[in-house]
Length: 344
Ligand code: KG4
Ligand code: ZN
Image (tube, helix red, strand yellow):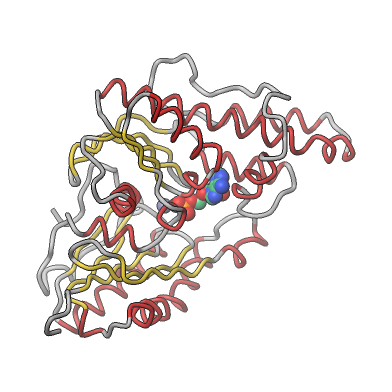
């Protein structure tokens, strides 16, 4: 390793993406590889946990090898292993955890267990190394929707969360009702770009509640009842307007609560993260409206928003370093709160 910066190998398998990345201890991403399972789960209309675990088993060592190739590195260059231990699908998490333990154990390397949600938060400083703390970050994905105060890069406080569906789930279920692809959030977003966002008034969950929590079950139900009364021709003719109006309602809830949280916390910066941060209206509105309020805005590139291992490596930079063999008894946890740092 003479003269070469030590690398952290990060592994992420919490849901349906098998991912590996190499990041330097100073936070430079040298490789980030991800194998999506969308094509596998598409026929079921959702992620099937057992199928996901098996696919991770087939792909885990492949993505690690690919990441080393992409970085032009060898396993000797790896000085530490980082891995997601929760929250997520337990069988899927176990595949990544055991892969990470095996690599670390074989080479007597230290290991850092990572909370998947801390990974999403860390996407902000991967994208913008100077992002100032404290900040408020919106994490919105297929499984989570939460607002978090990031006091510093290792101190996180939950400010609000969804009481029912996640924002990504609302987009995916909307896409499904409209007959778009799987998972559907991206397709609904693309279609919405061509429609009239004020054609329909969908309910905005917990709009006047004054709380920082979210609810997306109402918007989904009202879409269901709207479409139910239409013929196939009417649906086809109005699909873009419906998608645009539906997207407006979901995004309005996300943006208004993010800005309210930033004001309540008195922070000077906001960020968005998670797969839904790929949404083009959300990105535009956060950039513009947070910018107008004089806030520092971090909107990470798409590759750091959807599940990836680079963000797990970035979170590991401020996580605990467990020496060999102290981590061999580590367990995965399907439900891990944002306020828990595993291994501490
Ligand atoms: O973070 P992620 O890759 O996986 C987890 O759920 O943890 O997020 C995936 C979610 C899916 O629900 C997907 O439909 C949604 O992010 N998504 C989008 C867009 N791109 C991905 N939702 C809205 N607009 C998009 N452009
Ligand atoms: Zn995620």
